[in-house]
Image: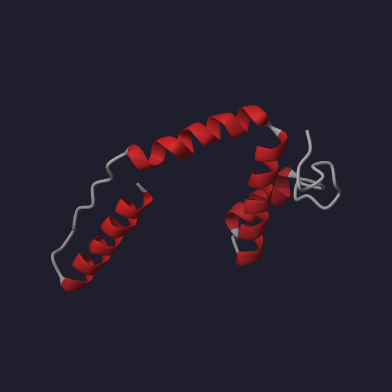
Length: 93
């Protein structure tokens, strides 16, 4: 099997990953760290086919759920945000 990227390249985010560095990325998330976490998640999907299958099943099931959108208060800002959430949820389905 081949792919766009070489999964054994030294440029992947898992190279040099330690428990300390992964804990720091969870404590202080910045845009660069979020990008590396996203790249790490992509790498995990590429390397572990069982993980990919389980994750794909969950991604396909997510739009089937009906997410309740309840307003804590009734002010105009809450109504506007709730309408945006409803529009987003209907677009995902």
